[in-house]
Length: 287
Image 1 (cartoon, one colour):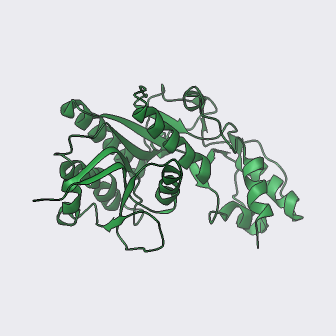
Image 2 (spheres, rainbow, N blue to C red):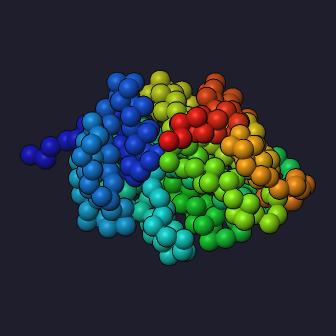
């Protein structure tokens, strides 16, 4: 007789963000099962080895009875083929493996605001149509369409795409390194958006709690902090905190500004609502 793997949440893609989501779920007394390409042994929840691009490695998922799925994978390389395999085909393979899961209530797809290829000073929200300007945005939008159609076809579970802006946080300190070297500053000043890794994980956990409490969710959320800001402003502030030289400030030209009003309307509260609070914590913890 086949053994059923009962769990509250299945996390496909246990990298930095996925693992932080798992740790927070466990702290909330939820059962978690993970899947990732490489084996790790230092986490206190079961993680099976599998590759979303290789359906034969996902056989254990056919035994899984999870209430929520978090599809939180990362591309191996910046190429159209890899994005198609990881985000589009990988999602199809995962959903196929879970076809017999009668307990599934909700699927979360960790996406990106990369699909908003438009350059504008306007504040963009989920109501604005995404216009991808590169292969990454095109494939992420395609994967979201696959997800929402699969949810409609299932008539059992619902879906939510989480469009994250640039993630920073522990181990993600590129901006701090860049601020210390004027030669690494970009030539032009552009608008930027970001979300602290811990806030991104906390929001995913918050939404899972809403699902388990039988609350209705939107089919898409932009996940970002409350402070769209120019690249030079962030670099200048970090450099000043560290005592390094800065460049002359330029007006922001290019890029985009993202709104988090739908995210905040859920009742979720950001721990790091702006770059200053987030980077101050990272600077204070530097070794």
